[in-house]
Image 1 (cartoon, helix red, strand yellow):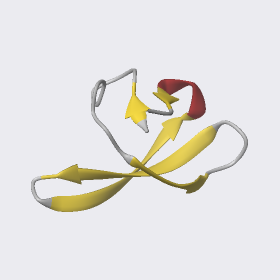
Image 2: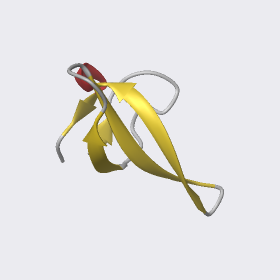
Image 3: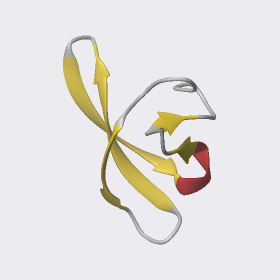
Amino acid sequence: MRITEGGFAELDAVFVTMDGEQRVILLLNMLNRQQQISMPLVSIVKN
C-alpha cells in the first residue's frame, strides 16, 4: 500500500487489517523496525 496523505505520505506500507469501517492498520518500516500505525482508509492506495 502507498500512503498518500499526512506525515507518512509517499511511504510504502503493508496492510494488516481493517480498524473499523473507515480506518486501516498498516505495518511501516521505520528506523529498521516495523511499526503498526492506524490511518484513515482514504489516505492509502494500492500499489
